[in-house]
Picture 1: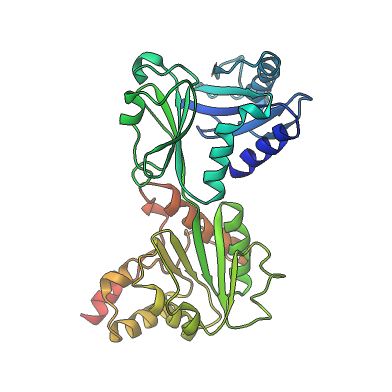
Picture 2: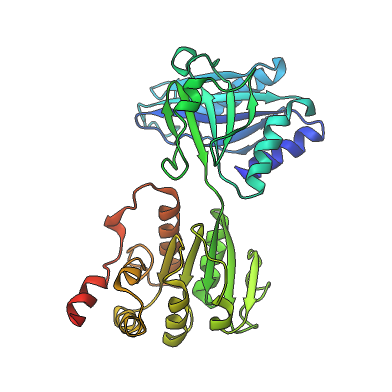
Length: 364
């Protein structure tokens, strides 16, 4: 979303009109879920996607028409024989699209605010009115932007959000995915998370690349400058070349920080976990064999780390997908990071077996 909004504001600022299109509601089986966005330009080119297929082509066709007359509309498509996939598969669901043409820089205020919030890494929720009566007075296509504290910071409507819209707004900590309530579509944008990678080897390098592509701000710690450098980690926001102990001592770790321990050896892993396990981090995960992890846990118990703290460590980290190669291992790790960040309930079925219960049994 951040990239789409940046492209939109820059294009319109250069005098290039664009239609902003967004999938704001789905029902039943659909190829894409609410929150997908696409820009359509006068020449028919696009940025982003609504899922492809016949629906996207029809949205683009209507967006070009609306771009000519400047009207904002909600478009609804039933995925039947008219809007099945090009290969003939019929989903049977329903998709509602917002199409909003922006033809001059004077119409950019809402989008500039939206882009600014995301550029700062803050969370927010966009509310799009679908039904006037259910929303308590909002007109269909009215849009309101709320910050992570629930305060309205921008609107593309006449007046502030009606009570029905504000009353149904839920905290980002409670609802992280799009939902519909009170005739309004709510589309959360999560606060940008920091990923601290301890270990700049091959696994750390691939994890950094994938994590940045899905919206994490990457920090890397390693004591080897030949590994922890901009050439190997061009996507990193911060590189810390220092002994693990000194790098992690006093480092700010908050509830928006994810920590991945993938160092080159047992001792370094243990040292990193000692510093991270009792922080308020949203996620702490460590790579390694079950035997190595068990030995580290036993050592940390002996140093006064509680079983409760160790119980929140995901070790071995990553989803169980039978990964063997470094790229596969990185995929399993980043998939777990995304699930923890995005979902209200973590899919336990994919979690690798924990060693905590086994450790309790063996240590009494």
